[in-house]
Structures are given as structure tokens and as C-alpha cells.
Amino acid sequence: MSKSTDFYTKRTLEAWDEAAPIHASINAALHEKVADPNFNNLNRDFDSLVNRFEVSNKSVVQVCCNNGIDLLSVKKKGAGRCLGIDGSKAFVDQAIGLAQAAGHDDIEFFHSDIYDLPDVFQGSFDIAMITVGVLGWMPDLTRFMGICSSLLKDGGILLIEELHPILNMYEEGNPSNIDGSYFRKEPFIESDGLDYFSYKKYDGKENYSFPHSMADILTAAIDNRLQLLHIKELAYNVGNFCADLEHTENNPPLGVNFAWRKGAV
Image (cartoon, rainbow, N blue to C red; front, side, top):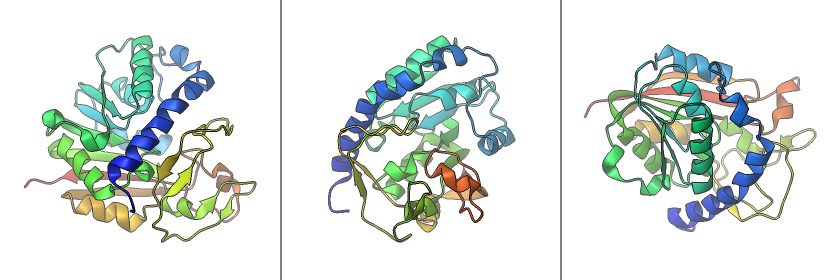
């Protein structure tokens, strides 16, 4: 990286704050949907992974929770204490509003750049959760994984759902196509907005994302005493990026799920 972690995250979070009202407008029906006792926004394989670790009455933290609907989905499964953390104040405000609409004022939300998270939450949770669209925004993946690990009790579980790293090679289109090296190290720099629902472009604040390989992810976890329990590559669209590839004859993996256990010192 040519610049500091703070440089990249500060500017990218400004872009997310800018995108928040656009997402809220597109997803206006969410306030009604989350009131359904059976509301569940989790993709099917990640939903099964969450069920495997029996979240009932367990403490759960979602790192980079966006508008909180995935954490709300876990709360509706009977989880105990739930905390969502996000660096975008605008999305934290949305999350609070949606939790209230769902009748779950007991879900906590905390606004913080994940790299500046205070120590007060360390060792507090049975399960930490990351859902699709987080790792690529992290300029320092090893440090990020260390922060996630620090939130867990010893023996706690980290669950991750993410776009497959191979998609860093692709450029969206009709059809999407390979346009770069899997081993790229330079960040992607964009300023045409963060509307990944309707794909409408707008003159937005500059944001930075980072092409981490599968080895980068695995090594960052291993370096933070996280033990791999589960990995599954997914052939279907999980994050609205290059979604057309799901229907091609020779489609690449589009998503990947992980489960890790935090080992004792």
C-alpha cells in the first residue's frame, strides 16, 4: 500500500455515508419486512452455517454490519446479546431504525472505524460474524482479522461469508469478463457510486477496495490463532457482483463461506 490504512478507510467510509440514503430509498420496504417474525436475510448456505453453531442465547457481534439486517436475522433465531459495528454513521442509524421496526430495541449498534475500535468489547462474544462485502474494503487484512479474533472469547467462532477472491479478476458487464490478474496488489479506486442494487452510477466520493487472494485470507486468519473448521465455495450469486456468471456454462465460484475457532493462548 502506498498510503496509510487511515487514509483509505476514512475516504471509503465517507463514500458509504454518501450511499446510505440511496440504499435506504431502494430498500424502503425493509421496515415492513423486518417486522415479520420469520424475517431472514441470510443466504442459504450461510444460514445453514449459522444454524450449525446454534446461536440460541449466544452473544453475537457482526463486524461491519451495514444496515444490520443480517444481525437482525440472527437475533430472530434466538441469539442473546447482539452487537453490530460499522464505520458508517449513516448505516448505523439505518440499522437502529430497522431494529426498532422489527421490535428488537435490545440489539446494540456501535459506530466506529473497525481499525479504531476501543478495547471495551474484547473477549466478549461467542460468535463473530462477517457477511458478504467486507473483506475487500480492508487495506490491512491481518490486522482486521486480529480485531475480529479479539472480540471473541477463547473457543469462540468466527463465521465469514464473502465474495470469492477469484472475482477480483473480473469486470462486470454483459457478460462479465476476466480483466485482470488474480495476483494484483494495487487497490481498486472508484468514484462512480456504491449502488450495488440498481447499479445506477453517480458522481460519488472516491473509495478504495483491495484484491485479497484466498491465501491472503487464510494466512491472515492463521496468523491470529484462528483454526479453520469449515470452508465451502459457492457457485451462485451471493453479493450482486458479476451475478450473470452464475448462469454461464463454465462459471467460477462466486462466493465462499468460512468458520473459524479462536484457539486458546
